Length: 134
Image 1 (cartoon, rainbow, N blue to C red):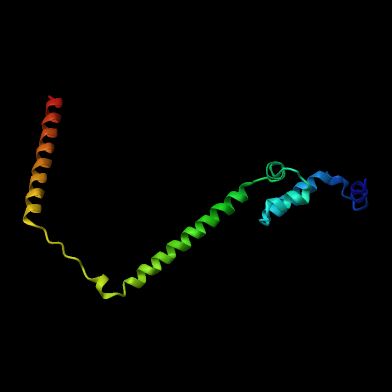
Image 2: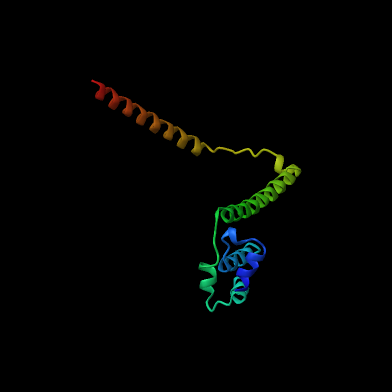
Protein backbone atom coordinates (compact mmCIF):
# COMPACT_ATOMS: atom_id res chain seq x y z
CA UNK A 1 0.00 0.00 0.00
CA UNK A 2 1.19 3.53 -0.78
CA UNK A 3 0.61 4.84 2.74
CA UNK A 4 2.65 2.02 4.32
CA UNK A 5 5.60 2.76 1.99
CA UNK A 6 5.33 6.47 2.88
CA UNK A 7 5.45 5.65 6.61
CA UNK A 8 8.52 3.41 6.16
CA UNK A 9 10.33 5.92 3.97
CA UNK A 10 9.85 8.68 6.57
CA UNK A 11 10.42 6.50 9.66
CA UNK A 12 6.82 6.90 10.85
CA UNK A 13 6.15 3.20 11.57
CA UNK A 14 6.85 3.68 15.28
CA UNK A 15 4.01 6.23 15.65
CA UNK A 16 1.09 3.84 15.06
CA UNK A 17 -0.50 6.08 12.42
CA UNK A 18 -3.31 4.57 10.38
CA UNK A 19 -4.69 5.93 7.14
CA UNK A 20 -8.27 5.89 8.42
CA UNK A 21 -7.18 8.02 11.39
CA UNK A 22 -6.04 10.68 8.93
CA UNK A 23 -9.59 10.84 7.57
CA UNK A 24 -10.85 11.58 11.09
CA UNK A 25 -8.16 14.20 11.57
CA UNK A 26 -8.97 15.77 8.22
CA UNK A 27 -12.68 15.86 9.10
CA UNK A 28 -12.10 17.31 12.57
CA UNK A 29 -9.81 20.01 11.23
CA UNK A 30 -12.51 21.07 8.77
CA UNK A 31 -15.14 21.11 11.53
CA UNK A 32 -12.81 23.22 13.69
CA UNK A 33 -12.53 25.70 10.81
CA UNK A 34 -16.37 25.89 10.81
CA UNK A 35 -16.62 24.34 7.36
CA UNK A 36 -20.11 23.45 6.20
CA UNK A 37 -20.88 19.82 7.21
CA UNK A 38 -22.33 19.13 3.74
CA UNK A 39 -18.99 20.06 2.19
CA UNK A 40 -17.16 17.74 4.60
CA UNK A 41 -19.66 14.99 3.74
CA UNK A 42 -18.90 15.36 0.05
CA UNK A 43 -15.14 15.44 0.59
CA UNK A 44 -15.25 12.24 2.64
CA UNK A 45 -17.63 10.58 0.19
CA UNK A 46 -20.38 9.79 2.67
CA UNK A 47 -23.90 9.15 1.42
CA UNK A 48 -25.49 10.29 4.67
CA UNK A 49 -24.68 13.45 6.62
CA UNK A 50 -25.33 11.49 9.84
CA UNK A 51 -22.16 9.48 9.26
CA UNK A 52 -20.12 12.65 8.86
CA UNK A 53 -21.62 14.28 11.96
CA UNK A 54 -21.67 11.30 14.31
CA UNK A 55 -18.65 9.21 13.35
CA UNK A 56 -16.19 11.76 12.02
CA UNK A 57 -16.90 14.70 14.28
CA UNK A 58 -15.52 14.42 17.80
CA UNK A 59 -16.18 16.98 20.52
CA UNK A 60 -13.75 17.66 23.33
CA UNK A 61 -13.70 20.18 26.18
CA UNK A 62 -12.15 22.88 24.00
CA UNK A 63 -15.34 22.97 21.91
CA UNK A 64 -17.42 23.59 25.03
CA UNK A 65 -15.04 26.35 26.10
CA UNK A 66 -15.19 28.00 22.66
CA UNK A 67 -18.99 27.85 22.57
CA UNK A 68 -19.41 29.32 26.04
CA UNK A 69 -16.78 31.98 25.36
CA UNK A 70 -18.66 33.06 22.24
CA UNK A 71 -21.90 33.41 24.18
CA UNK A 72 -20.18 35.19 27.07
CA UNK A 73 -18.52 37.65 24.69
CA UNK A 74 -21.82 38.32 22.96
CA UNK A 75 -23.61 38.80 26.26
CA UNK A 76 -20.89 40.97 27.71
CA UNK A 77 -20.65 43.16 24.62
CA UNK A 78 -24.43 43.74 24.64
CA UNK A 79 -24.36 44.55 28.34
CA UNK A 80 -21.50 46.97 27.81
CA UNK A 81 -23.49 48.75 25.08
CA UNK A 82 -26.49 49.03 27.42
CA UNK A 83 -24.27 50.35 30.20
CA UNK A 84 -22.70 52.96 27.94
CA UNK A 85 -26.14 54.07 26.76
CA UNK A 86 -27.22 54.51 30.37
CA UNK A 87 -24.05 56.45 31.11
CA UNK A 88 -24.84 58.79 28.21
CA UNK A 89 -28.37 59.31 29.49
CA UNK A 90 -27.01 60.60 32.81
CA UNK A 91 -25.96 63.71 30.92
CA UNK A 92 -29.61 64.56 30.27
CA UNK A 93 -30.70 66.96 33.09
CA UNK A 94 -34.31 65.75 33.15
CA UNK A 95 -33.17 62.23 34.04
CA UNK A 96 -31.05 63.45 36.95
CA UNK A 97 -33.94 65.10 38.77
CA UNK A 98 -35.25 63.22 41.76
CA UNK A 99 -38.84 62.18 41.50
CA UNK A 100 -40.90 63.07 44.52
CA UNK A 101 -43.80 60.82 45.27
CA UNK A 102 -46.84 62.33 46.89
CA UNK A 103 -48.50 60.03 49.34
CA UNK A 104 -52.21 60.55 49.59
CA UNK A 105 -54.07 60.42 52.90
CA UNK A 106 -55.70 57.13 51.86
CA UNK A 107 -52.26 55.63 51.44
CA UNK A 108 -51.34 56.74 54.99
CA UNK A 109 -54.39 54.97 56.39
CA UNK A 110 -53.58 51.78 54.48
CA UNK A 111 -50.00 51.86 55.70
CA UNK A 112 -51.14 52.32 59.32
CA UNK A 113 -53.59 49.42 58.95
CA UNK A 114 -50.87 47.15 57.55
CA UNK A 115 -48.46 48.13 60.32
CA UNK A 116 -51.08 47.26 62.96
CA UNK A 117 -51.75 43.93 61.26
CA UNK A 118 -48.04 43.09 61.28
CA UNK A 119 -47.75 44.06 64.95
CA UNK A 120 -50.70 41.79 65.83
CA UNK A 121 -49.17 38.85 63.96
CA UNK A 122 -45.84 39.35 65.67
CA UNK A 123 -47.49 39.46 69.10
CA UNK A 124 -49.46 36.26 68.31
CA UNK A 125 -46.22 34.52 67.38
CA UNK A 126 -44.68 35.62 70.67
CA UNK A 127 -47.66 34.26 72.60
CA UNK A 128 -47.39 30.91 70.77
CA UNK A 129 -43.66 30.73 71.52
CA UNK A 130 -44.26 31.51 75.20
CA UNK A 131 -46.95 28.81 75.42
CA UNK A 132 -44.59 26.26 73.89
CA UNK A 133 -41.89 27.09 76.41
CA UNK A 134 -44.27 26.59 79.40
